[in-house]
Length: 96
Image (cartoon, rainbow, N blue to C red; front, side, top):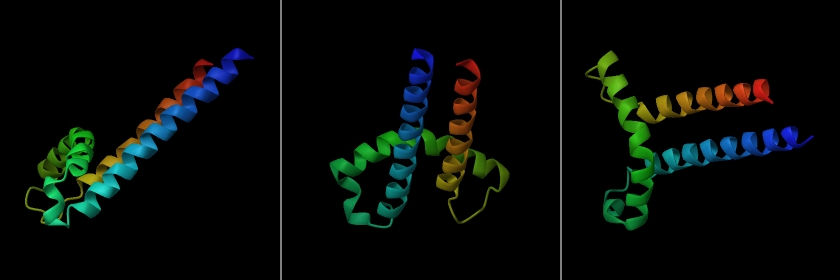
């Protein structure tokens, strides 16, 4: 019985954490269009959280299509985070 509760807590926590990161990525995309806000402390905090996720996705995009004028790294990151979330949840469901 305790394993099921722990499983639920872990799945819920991981799901919520990834959802928050995805929301922060979307907020970062929206705020990137507002140049005057770039020096804001809140913006720097968001970027310090999402940039370690977005930078590898940007490199992936640049290696596949080097001269693409649109940055799809946020979409790639959200897609990969969803896959990661499903993978972790499936592993937890298998373990417990």
